[in-house]
Image (cartoon, rainbow, N blue to C red; front, side, top):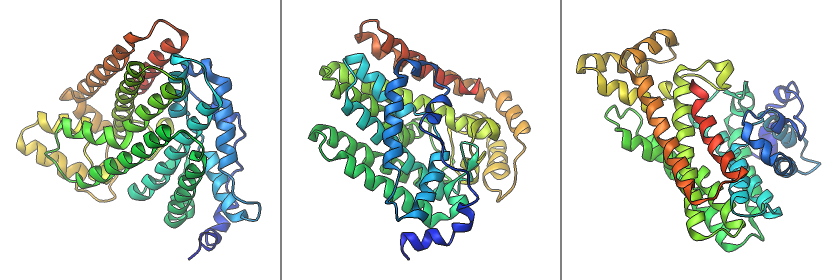
Length: 353
């Protein structure tokens, strides 16, 4: 079945969806205070993203799907890191704007595919594309966005394209590793960190590396910013995983309990399972991970996590990675851009407090 035919099957649903947000919405809704430093550049990146997420005029049905993607306005953290890293090493150029847009479009494509894999129902407090329009449309829309990325990469320096391509491969490898670890109740913390490094933190690291490369940063500067991004990405994912367990859907703007439903351990459960005896461990697994379509009692779960200091442990480990992220910036002289990077990683860690 063609892409257009698939969209037509969901056309009645699409027509009920709201129109896309305008160019400024994705920025004005950002809750990253440090991004005020790069607001004008981030607007340019958002404008380019909007331009790329438009099909031919005759592809009306596909454009309705793209409009639905527009309504899922994100905080633009990853493109923001491209720009801040670039500013740490020099001036922000048109290439920074282009690469920032590429990074965000790759992220959007992975979200579409992840929601199909995990049967996600919400993104940013709106129904996910797969929920509204079906898995086929969501997968093909993600593929379309990746096709746009290929087009945008034409003309970039070979070194930049190599970094982008390597990141795309690692993200897929990380997702495959996570799927392979489902129902692995012996998953260790180090194995979990390895998985989220590949599936999530790599894109943060890539964003920072590219920002530095495009500003002609030195090798030590580029490597330091890549390490900052990797640790910041780990902070983001650990926090995101914790929010999915204990957060309110209205605040997290995504489906709660998805990892539990998909039998995936995250750090808070890894700590919990290592803290209880074998009988309690079996009870936790049976109560939360082996149930099907059962809404868990979040308040009771939070009490148990507090009783075994699992929440405290995860937040402490998050701060460890914040410290690692901030520490590698010692190479750089004091600047507004450096301060913004420090503020950004601290902001990401505070989302569960």
